[in-house]
Length: 271
Ligand code: HPA
Image (cartoon, rainbow, N blue to C red; front, side, top):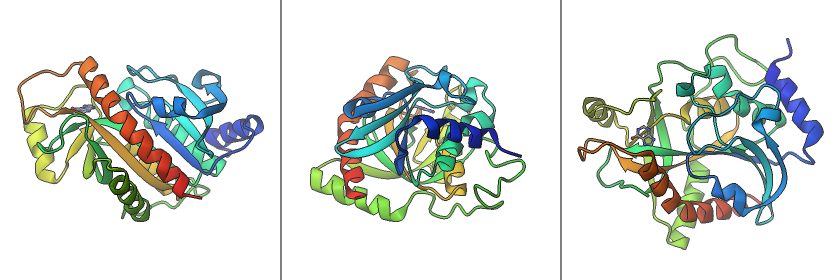
């Protein structure tokens, strides 16, 4: 059976002037990087067969082919979250399309809450590992052998060599870059204090509502993955306030210039 993501990849191949080796999924408040580059082609998600439509705040829904300092990148501006009510297959559909298109490297960004006092709002954290606490797995169901094996390894989901390269760039550019373990929940309710304490005890540094499904699917398909999280708030382990969406967006914006500089230089290093 031809899978719908294979058909969508064929549809895109007919329209895109070229398919770059690198794609990026942009999370909350991090759309500016797609706008920094020179847009070659932009396709609204609504026009792409098989794509759901995004309902999350501050998420655009566009596929953008762009040139960033001489490097072509395919941006997914906006993602589909499990908490929006999309089935897991829809959440990871765009990632599977990228795999079918032949994209080799996936960079994922997100916003998260911090479980560590030292990682304050505005911190940029490169993921070193993750904990899937979403209660499901995007690979459940018949395995598509064309994409990858039934039981893919999740040893080093975040490419160690790419991570080392990013630390070297951050060092050279004076970009404060941290490393941490990201735990994914379904949301949309935020975590209780007891949940935060439990997650911190498991070894998580950050908590968020995305990324892990896309990373599992990308690794299943053999893509190299790098992921960055922007801390938008301390979890309630450290204070007693409710978080506003405005606060979350403002903190994501604060880190965005550093993150754009880091990612642009990383892309250049891939030559
Ligand atoms: N929890 C879960 N997801 C988040 C948070 C949080 O505190 N902040 C931004 N995304």
